Length: 460
Figure (cartoon, rainbow, N blue to C red):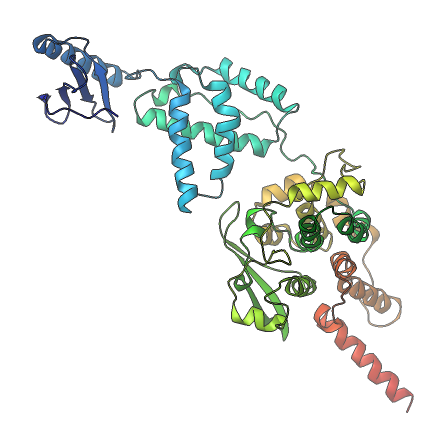
């Protein structure tokens, strides 16, 4: 590491000076330009002080004119600037202050931006080069990345350009426009109700076939994790990874207990949502799986706000990643590819299952977007194929609203279907537990009680 020498000559206070380092006989000029935060350092290539002063003045004046006329002060390669941004992001992640998108940006810079743009001068990224990058990336991956993935790459790309502009390596006028060649609103790989039920029935065999004890423990947790994602619509990964028992509240609404989740981390930061009633059964299974919580009632665990991860193995440890085990599960059950889209499924497909089920139940799009921590546009773009099914009741005709007769029977059937919906059926299948009717539907319970009383009165 070079140590600055005391031998320095100030030519313009806070703007221009000459420095003679201990390890060099030649003067180095340090200069700063109005409007830029960075000090620039260049060698004068001379040991003569008088000549060095003349060269320093010319360097400073040329840099000043270049900046005023919209030209970069100096030219730099893309890679060193990208590495500055990369290190800043890694520092924020390590400190826990990074935005949820930071990891996506880190991946984009490392895997795509530096490998392609690294040797280009930052001020020479013309539209033709951007187009070449898109072709290169498509060939590298073997397909066109989705619109959302390309948005992440573009955001990371602009972070590098922001750094370059701030340091005077390019001007705002020279900033190239990033483009997105991905398809927005494409239909995602998804699961049908029947397929998820097949997967849950396959789960015990999958657990038993694990070669090591830890593999079996991971698969055991996965058998609960999968229906949990399907029942909540949580984003696999960060949202679920940092979920602790203390982040789950029980609220009483209309005399009925409701689970309220307060997620601490996610794609868009912290968010809250109300969980499906079937999650009581999943939480009970997770309690039984936790060695240090198995002897305590679920109500007590939630009330005590225990600061322990919800998704832990039965030995108390936390798995590194559930993506690979889930893929193995899909491959062995022959459910990896979605027959509708022909795309490979992932844990994220469970979130799409949740969105589909809630839309078909009649949940308004705005409410669902808030519940899932996403935008109305995303719901509209990716689930527009459900519109005919969502309007099936209107297409089929309106049920007679008068009491009694066929209309009353149809309403009773519809209430029963709401109480025993697909998500609940899936959870009961996966846990082997059942949810009391009063927790499923207070209105339906009251209806049954009234019918029972009427039957008892009629029978004397």
